[in-house]
Image 1 (cartoon, rainbow, N blue to C red):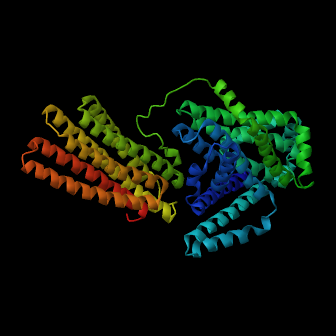
Image 2 (cartoon, rainbow, N blue to C red; image 1 turned 90 degrees about the horizontal axis):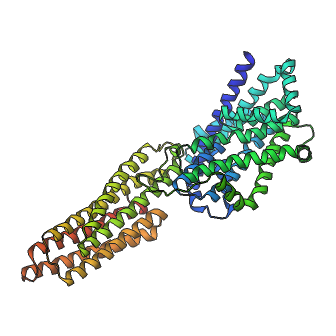
Image 3 (cartoon, rainbow, N blue to C red; image 1 turned 135 degrees about the horizontal axis):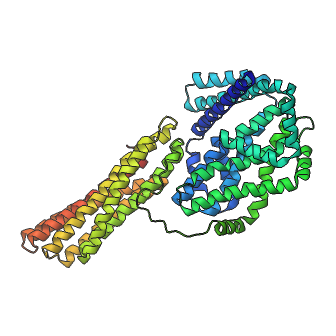
Length: 534
């Protein structure tokens, strides 16, 4: 029991330390993880680099996998992009193994002490986050050391030595052990840490360790499989690609095991099994990526054949929001922004359609406006809920400010949708009461609609790109709309007073320009989010 609890306690500290390091790294990186979405292109090599970067930042290939499946499900990432990112994630996760494979046990407590000082005594947040990372790394080494110490007595257990020898004789058995262990602890890095702890005590040779670490790569695919449940077809294909990529690589290395082992021994210290394990882990994932990357288009076509079918994605609610991303605030804000932009474009289309229904006196178009308004209201509720659930605890000051600004922007966009609904109702009054509107008045409304929507569209682009120049332009456009609204109001009142305009038509006209002016006001509010005035 002493061995078990010593090992379990060390493993618990190791996993906790990984989470602490990940949290500190995310805070240190700030919005960089969020901006990966904007940097990612269709070039597979870039996808691999981004996958490696994100995984090394959040210290979890499983988290990266869930993120990728979510992005594919939301339409943020294509299947081909997702495959390249998952390849990179496999490489990125080996960094932890490389770090812990060095003999740093003499430096554990100095590292913990330095991390503690930086975290608790620094006034600057960035230094605090760096301290958290260093403190977490020290705990990581401490957990590994405790596991090594706990497993030392196993040298005297013939049954354990015999079991390890069986793994050396039967590599398939080792692969199975790796799959099961990783699936249970939900961390490939933790499984590799166990192997390194065994190696440090001379309890496992490299011949037995390699099959286990191969199985470890397959076991981590369980996360992708679970994440794809209930997702769309593309997300299921991404999960399948991750599994097939690792299984195929494992089969190839098993066939070439003697050659692979010679290569690992060639690039590693001869008497350091821990370093050999870490290098085998990294070498396998780099080799697998180099093998599949040039054939990525063929591989994607194969996945489509293996997971056949077609589907039309019809968003009836939020498309981009994913509760699994709430623990990573930067990414949650990126998804919320995407959903807000989608909602904003729907509101813009609704204003356009409401005006079109007014000009054409088309009730079918106005019915569509009302249906869209229900969707906009639902999106406003869901986005607000999502942002409210997004913890500000792990955010940088910039992200926290962005979080507050997005809540304001959602409210303004919903109000734009309300103004579209108001215009649609005014259009119905015009149709039902057969109110005459002069060509001159219609031209004035068209001009104001164009200017008002230019302000609104520019504000949405400014919000999406966090572009201050565009936000400044919105302020100018809003002033132009205000001037136009006052000019049109005065000239129309003169027409009413002179009897050139029907009284009922005049009221409708004035109400429409008032609603269009309010659209530009909300555009100004959205611009203020970007300008940092909210």
